[in-house]
Length: 106
Image (cartoon, rainbow, N blue to C red; front, top):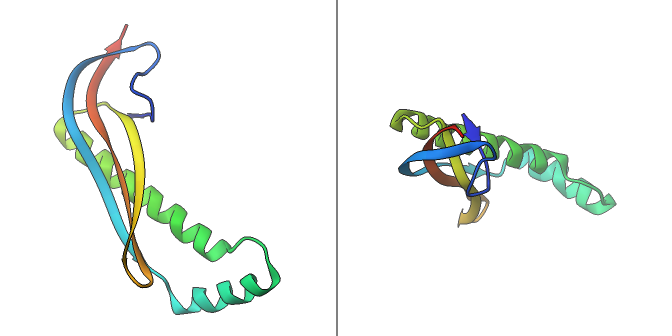
């Protein structure tokens, strides 16, 4: 599966557009991570607990988008974007979306 943020893929030609595909996940903060994050906030530096949580969320949303694209018969997803939104205090949604396509070599 080819995944790109651009509209086109170098050396490939889009032969069929299958439509919008998306994947999302909603994550809540963890009290243990909040305590560690508070300590890190006092001394400065990267809050690695949250960095890891967001990275895992991003990967899960991409995996879900890819699964949806594969179910449609796509071999690529173009124009991929990410979006986040707050669902409630302490919880956020991470959404990944793009256009599922079938490509072939030029």
